[in-house]
Image (cartoon, rainbow, N blue to C red; front, side, top):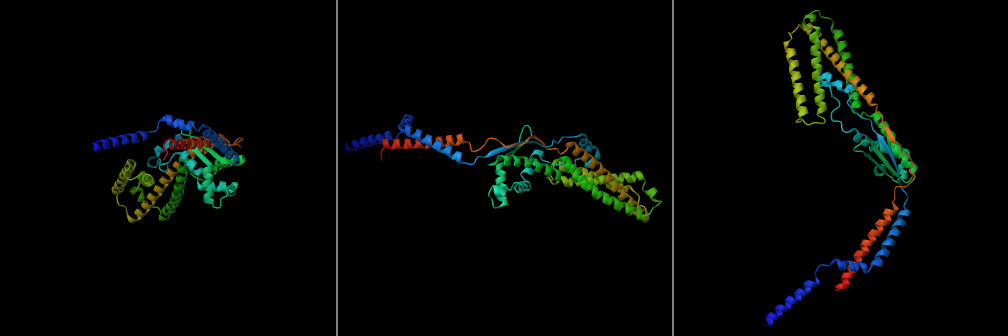
Length: 375
C-alpha cells in the first residue's frame, strides 16, 4: 500500500515538474516585452540618436564615377582573308581572353597603381608608410567593374576630397590609354607584334641566304637539275612546314597535347613533313658543285617565300589594328560629386535603433522568465 502511494506521489510530482517546464508561449513573450515597452522604446531612440551623431562626426566620403567603352574587337575582312594564307592563319591569336577583363586587369595592375600613387601622393593621403599597403588601400577605394549586358567599364573612386576622387577616376582612363599604347592587348595588336618580329628575323636570314648564293657562283647544270617551278614549290612547302611547327609551339602554351586542336595540328604537320620528304627523295642527286649551288638556291627561295608570307600577315594585322583604332571612348567623364555617398546617417541611426531594440527585448524576456520561475 505504501509502495503504491509512493509511486502515485512520484508520478504527480513528475507531472507537476513537466507542467512547469513546458515551452514558453508567444503570449508570455509578448507580455514580457510589452511590460517593458517604454524602456525598449527609449533605448532604441537613444541608440538611434547616438548612431546618427556618430555618423555625423565621421568624415564624409565622396564617390566619383566614370564610364568607359573599350575598343570593340570584331571580325574584319582582313582577318577573314588570313585563311587564304595556309598554315600561318591564326598563328598568333589563339587563347585570347575577354578584352574587357584584360582592360580591367590592366587598370588594377601594380604599374597603374604606382603611377596613381605617385601622381596624387596617395601614400601621404592614406597615411601609409609602405607602398604595398597603399596599393591595397587604393584597390579598396577604386572599384572597377564591367557591365554584363553592355560591356562598359565602370570606375568608381571613393575619397574624402570630391575633386581628388574625380581626378583619380579620370586618371584611370588616362593610364589605360597609356598601357594600351605600349602593350599589345587586342588580337590585331598581338598579331601585328608577332609577325613584325618574325618579319625582322626572316629578313635577316633572307639577306644571309642571298649573300651565300652570290658567293657560290652560277652553275649551268642547275638549270636542268633545279627548274624554277620545282624550286618555288619546294620553298613554299618548306615554308608551310615551318609555319605549322611555329603554330604548334604557340598552341602548346594554352592547350594540352590531348586537345583535338593539337592533334589536328600535329596531323597536319606530319602530312606536310611527309610530302616534303617525298619531294626531296624524287630529285636526282646532282654533282657536288651543283649540289652546293642548288642547296643555297633552295634556302634563298625558302627564306624569300617565308618573308612574303610574313609580310602579307603583317600588313593584314596592321589593317585590322587600324580599323580597331585602339580607341578608348569615355561615355561619362567623372566630375566632382556635390553630395557625399558615405556615411549614410539614416542607415547608421536605423541600424543602431534596431540593434538596441533587439537587445532590450531579449533582456525583457529574460527578466520576465526569471520573475515567473525564480531560482
